Image (cartoon, rainbow, N blue to C red; front, side, top):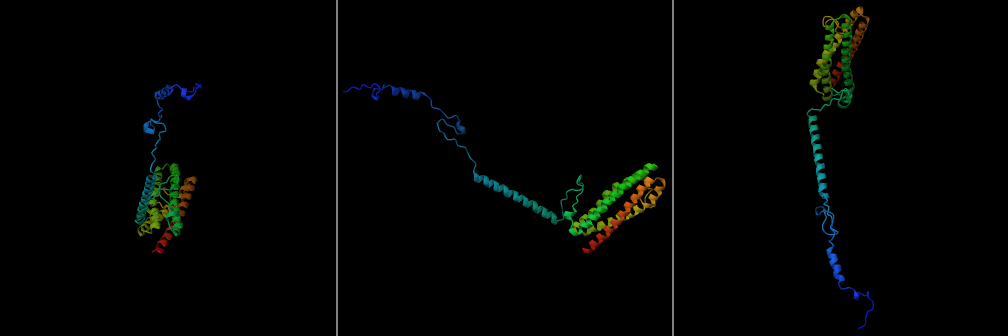
Length: 266
């Protein structure tokens, strides 16, 4: 047989090399995935990580159901508001005065356009009465200090404390509601108590001593008397007389116009 002189020929490879390589490969442990099995890892190379995704159709159905629920609630609220409006029940939010709201007042939004001017004038007459009573309190205070008569000041305080809220409750608020709802009952309440208001303003402008005690009102008769003792206090009383006179004229005009408005709608 011919002899192979190449010592590196494949036929001359050590027959134990393959067995040794196999033994070495078997002795090396295989690498495992670093991810735990619960997070998609496994003991094999190239394992697939499965991330569960939400069903988009299910999410869409939930959003549609939520939107329908909101629409249903809005419709329920609107039906309730309509029912309250038909029943004459309105939710009144305090909005006047703006710096400290204590009453609800929205002539531009709630009173008919053709009656807004009259309502504004009536509102001015109510504010005018408050101004008259506050000025009357100030003038009487000055006179009470000058004459050391605290009783007249206490009576002036009673006029101011009772007159401001009662005028709003008894005649201005009924007129506001009557203009808004065209109610005969509230118009009647306004006419009764506003007539009393007009009478009070006329009497206060005169201030006869037979009705009110002493110098508790800044009428013309009392102003003339106060001028003899103190010019400054007398000037305050004269200005109070002018305020009550002006308030009386405006109130008479408002009473006449509201009566004409009432008759024109009947």
